[in-house]
Length: 237
Image 1 (cartoon, rainbow, N blue to C red):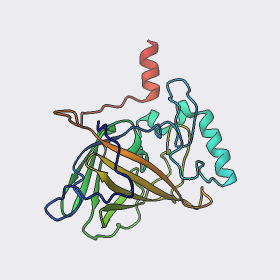
Image 2: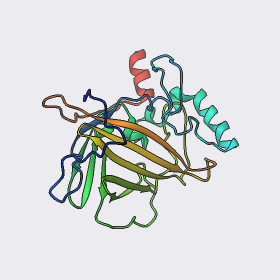
Image 3: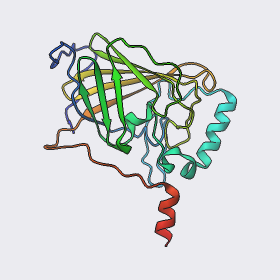
């Protein structure tokens, strides 16, 4: 992975461009954060490294009933996390799962190919609108460029995914706005704003860095998920 520190906000980075003049985000990327385990600050636990919060303001602004649900989720997290059943992770969680993903740009869309569960997102940047309401694990993504930032509007997410392994969650009213901003050749600043009036008291943001993977001949590999119940059965035989 890239080792150098990212450029500061004060420096105006202008890197490689695609033929249509947009910032070139092509490559394989991965986060180094502990957000997959818990978006908020947390101590180390069995198989879980300690980590700092990636949430602006440190804490997710839950409504009281939703906070109680989050605590209940945490107590049963080892079996209730949808990923233990091989369900898709949803957005924004797919971005900070500890697996690499590849960005492939074209003038009309940006593809994101994730190693985890072989997930693929097609983010149309041709001005096309969201389709009629659907109920999707990964939602529907439409992108646009604001200067050098790729802004992705994500709607039509179902309520069956969690935001991390600690039980942070959302409803089917979740609306996510993602921002991908290159800060130097090997780092992208990722920001996601989450709005969900059924669960949160206000919109809130998470921020983290994506690092370019620089290993030679690196590829996105095949991934086969075995759900928690099946793993437990097989290992107990």
